[in-house]
Amino acid sequence: MTPGLYLAFVAASALLIATPGPNVALIVANSVAYGRRHGMLTVAAASCGQIPQLALTAFGMTSALSLLAQAFDWLRWAGVAYLLYAAFETWRAPALDLTRTPPDPRSGRAIFTRAFLVSTTNPKTLLFYIAFFPQFVTREAPLAPQLAVMSATFLIVAVSIDSLWALAALKARGLLAARGRLRNRLAATAYFAAGVGLAAIRRTG
Image (cartoon, helix red, strand yellow):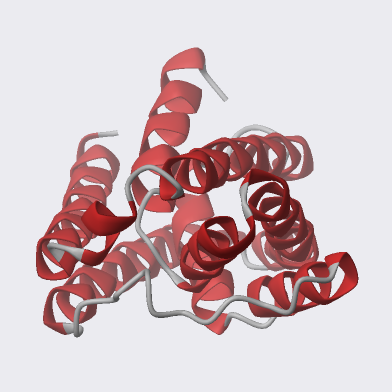
């Protein structure tokens, strides 16, 4: 990956990871209920839950793109279409109240287990990986190293942003409950901008 493409991947990942979802709701719930330690434990568990999905994405994509080189551009356009669909669905979705998710029992094992399962079994995350990663792959270079770097980078960005949610939850609980509709609108705009921007890059690249 060129430095410019890599930085674009980092920026787009940060923008899209910041969108609240089931992981963030659980992180906020445990942080508010039990404090920073349990909130960060939830972050660690949710991050561990992303590793199998990232590994599956990288392995499956490497195999598929190696076998179906002629379908490379079609896969990219399918990813763009999914991002635009995600923007439409997010815009229409009911507002998520981050303060209404019940916390886990105050047990390190229970907290870790639930957060890991919530993260691992979220099909939307896997679909997002499959749609998002091909947009930044350079066909002329080996696929496996690129996907490995993107997976590691995505995980680091996710841990960083989820940690900020955990640390902010204690001080901003009221703000988290308010303006849920606005959060949806901003998230939908982020998905739409990513889809349109990546489509434009591919059309001129």
